[in-house]
Length: 204
Image (cartoon, rainbow, N blue to C red; front, top):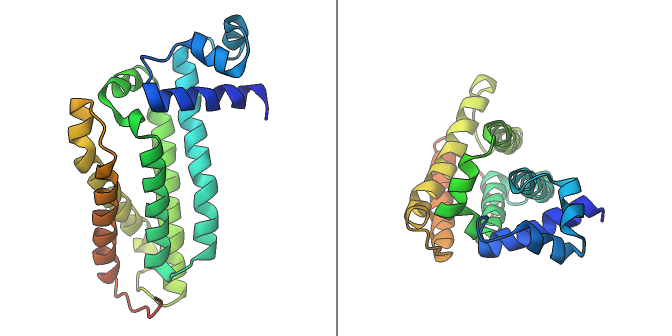
């Protein structure tokens, strides 16, 4: 593992437990066993490090999503449910990153492009699953409607997560138990949407 990755992983570990504001660059340097000056050689400030942490998380999630999509186990619903379970696992593990004080730090970062690219990739994985479902004759959807339906499913999933965690975000008090309830509701919502596409799979 290269030094930069070590720094990112050490930062992620601290950010996930203490938050952005309470984590110092000196602590991260100590965790990686380098001097603070050496740390600043890689990252000129905490903001640039936070941005790379978000990129790292996005990449790690995508790496784990791919084999689930490729396997297509359980068809459309089985695959999307597995992806939602993976997302919930990540959310629980890094729940502190949702907290209010951390969102204040994120406001100072130029992350709009990063989040938009993430959204495009998420729509792509939903679309890939839907295409597999069409080819498998589980669902009926025209080629021209694939992007629109993929976007609706993604916005539904993300909207339910935001709606259920908004209390924690405002109060700054994390409650990881919310994630389990969000996952349940997301699965129910996706099932309703998929069944609206003429779902006829016998896959269990």
